Image (cartoon, rainbow, N blue to C red; front, side, top):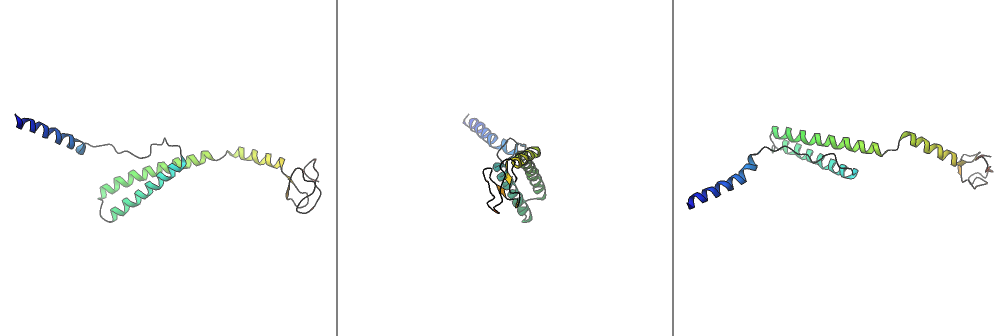
Length: 143
């Protein structure tokens, strides 16, 4: 009876330890696309590129088989591509719209006065240009 109990315990122990070793797991990636922080994406990209360099070095040194190299290289290159695309999309979305830029330039040109002789910018309250001394007409922006 004792031998049967020991056998059951040993079989359970080997099963508990061995099943995860033989189970085929789906490869997971570090990047799932839900992160918003640009600096986090940049650091992940740098880490992935460093991993790719390490994989290439290990393959050239003979530490990785050709099959393992191909699998790992493709996995991390795909992940790096996704990260780079996400970074570019995030950078593009942070750029102001072209129309908004044009509106800002137009508004700035309306409020900024310049000297009629030398073209240097002057303040709205200035009566004379600080650069050349020409008189400034405060009603229309130019003399």
